[in-house]
Amino acid sequence: MALKEPRNQTWKDRKEYKASEPEIENWERRYQELYTTFNRLYFSDQLPLYRVSLHDRLEVPGIPLALSKHVAGYCDKKGRRIDLEAFPFPKGQSILLHEMAHVASNVHHGPKFCQEMERLAAAGAPIGKLNMMNYVVSFDMRNGHVRAE
Ligand SMILES: [Zn+2]
Image (cartoon, rainbow, N blue to C red; front, top):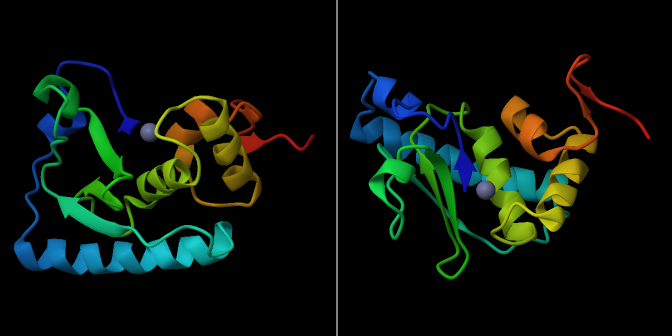
């Protein structure tokens, strides 16, 4: 799961805009298409089909609400489903890629997952700054790019 800003007041609390049903449906369809596109571009079409599901707000079953407030995405391997906070398309694409890296590795943030993130970064996938900072060891903070090694 992707975590952001470990404070009491989270970005979810500050979020003022409430997405309408048609908006959520529209974004959900486009994130689902993006899953297929990312799978082709960065995973050689090797990932099984997962259903991408949008929620405003996302609450993850089995984890406390206080922690759930920080979660932007969740990967349910058993149900082959990715749950995303309802970010307007394509704002949540880096979170989608984070969850796809879980599909390709495991549900932890250990070496296997980080290796997957490294691979995505090197392939030029739009994994976003938070993923870079947290999981890509070769990320050069000062220059904002992945060091070639
Ligand atoms: Zn995660």
